[in-house]
Image (cartoon, rainbow, N blue to C red):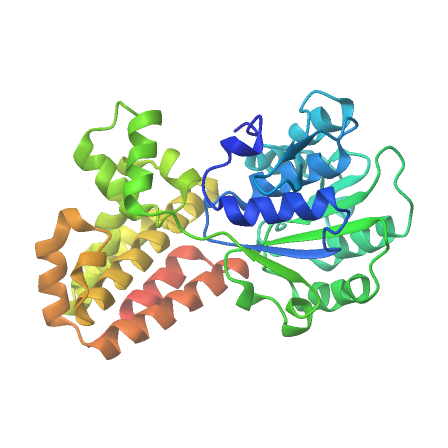
Length: 373
């Protein structure tokens, strides 16, 4: 992943981006900001671009149509290039986790995953394996926020998720209540409702909306011409309006996960076959591969349940899994709205179990066996 060379290359949400650039140019960027939007909408990329605009040594400016000044970045100065090295967050987190594994056992427990591409820019991702932002990470943020910037005009802290341990969320309030004049906190959230109301009330919120399906299809046609037209349409719907997700969408992996998700649902709509069910969930037992498979399965299951709700509510034109419409029609006729609602709640509990590092296959088994009509 690379950072776009200019803000004009950032896909979608031009109005929201221009307002943020105007605020930076005027020196009015909020000290505490929530960037909200679906996965793949570009929240992390935009956060880095905003950081580069704030810290850029050259401070270039563009003019809006009404004459207002828009902040930008050069992309080549020492500050910009260092911040841009954090563009591939997954790669950075993997390297940080590997470095932690090389430590002594006593040190591992005290070491939290932090990404620092620049002395005045700190990126805080959810800490594996629970994938929550933890107290130690927030304490580091608070400690570093007490010191003036060393090489750039401002200090910037980017928290890449809204999933906090309770103690970490409460501690974050301390710096949100009285943020230093030279510091900016940017929280990225797929669902701002995960955050404490007291955190949300102390932050300005900018939402990145979903792009229309037609716009995503055009984007795929330009950037992934190898993908057949029918698959482009399907990917555009499955990406849920997120340009970044669409461009990197692995349809084969999704279809494989969806096949297992359909087995879970079919098992509830007909006579249960627990032998086939447990044989499938056994493949999700452990390891990094198992975690990736489980995440893909849960996402596919979530989209299928949403499609069943859309059919139940009489809005089939909004379906995402359009290639299996007959199967969805059959399942919709066999399953009640109450069942779909209960399944959605059960899915949330599986996500919670993953964060607590429960055995994945046991969580899936418990979820699957609870799906009785």
